[in-house]
Amino acid sequence: MFFFLIALSAIFWVLTVLSKDYTSTIHAKAQFVDFPSDKLLIEEKEVDLQLQVNAPGFALLAYKFKIFKKIPLSVDGFISKRKGKLWEYFWIGEQSLAEVQEELPASMQLLHVQPNRIDLLFCEKSQKTVPVKLKSDLSFASMFRQKGAVKLMPDHVIISGPKTIVDLIDFVPTKQLYLENIEHDEQGTVLLEDPKHPELNYSQEELGWELMVEQFTEGQTDVPLKVNGLPKGYEIKLFPEEVSVHYLVSLNDFELLKPTMFKAEVDFSETKKRLAVKLKKQANFVENIRITPSKVEYIVIKK
Image (cartoon, rainbow, N blue to C red):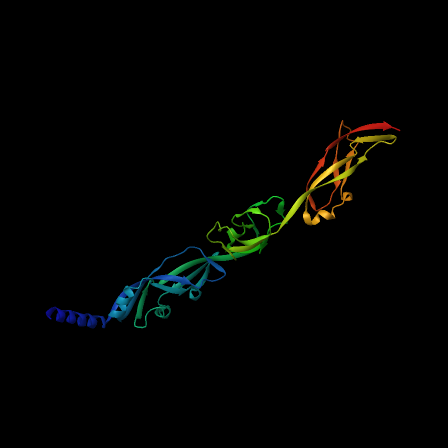
């Protein structure tokens, strides 16, 4: 019973003490918010605010146990002035007591704040639109190939940051896109590479992409040879008189190919033991063209 009465007395004493008002200094970190959209902070700054308050003991004790003690300060409300090529934004504590008071419990009355002045330096923010370059490592299944370039959506982004850095950038690369054994159309998203300068910002960090794929086959057609540069009064006999043109073509375009879409010739003015075959005309939707034979023998006959 004795110890119970002692404990009860102690509780009443603590409650009495904590219910009284005290003047004390509490600490909080300044959190800068609402930065001007057209300017860039040059250097991050950590500021420890010392707040002299008058409050009941309960409120002071509760604040002491608060884990994240941050006071947001709106930079848009700072006083600004130009300083050469830079802009100086400064905050005056005595003029901003009401702003800080709003972030404190209602039972606390703010009396004074230190530091009384906070300075932040900003530079003008520059921006421009630059193309995106895809970094890719693609491999296709047998008899399949890429149809056209990989489409990026969007293929340009807006970069912003200090003008001296922005002016040096001509494009933004993506992170590597790996695809293996591709045999049908693909699509997805890819991230941009992280900026090399921490002051740079991109309008977006992720892009969509679309890859078109087509199946192809190898084709072959025989093309007669034409002779250029043969002097008058002479005839020429070529061995062989026609060559085989081998090519790769999409299955969708295979039926469109005609032998007349190819023309091959030799030039007799370049008189050598064997004449080199040159392809002078070809279909614009074929690739990897190979001519056999690449050189032909000949006999010249006087009429």
